[in-house]
Image (cartoon, rainbow, N blue to C red):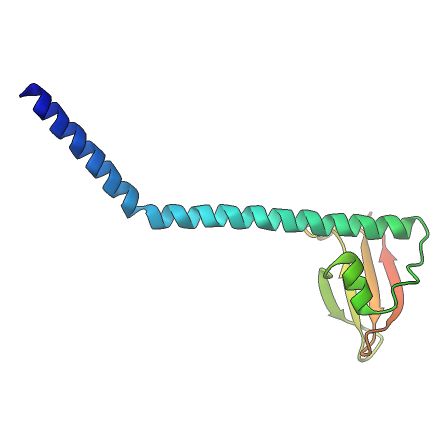
Length: 129
């Protein structure tokens, strides 16, 4: 009889624990998805920062980036810009901004001025202080 009571208590605990797990399965799966998304974002930031390192190394080495004549060639070489901004002094043009992804203020920056025909007009840099 004692064995029967112990087995009943044990099976009740297993059953209740299983129900609890099922009850919170959606939440657990959602947290797992958030963790995976965060890892994917970190990987993407690292890749974009590596592309900026490559760009900045070429500029600091004195490379004029002469082969990059279009916005499409810039994107192919260095990925998507952090921002595409309207150019202040050039109507119909935009500036592609490249910098480290999460360093907003203390980061070197590269601006490519691109016209409506997707041609690169100039390159401007700002060094971090």
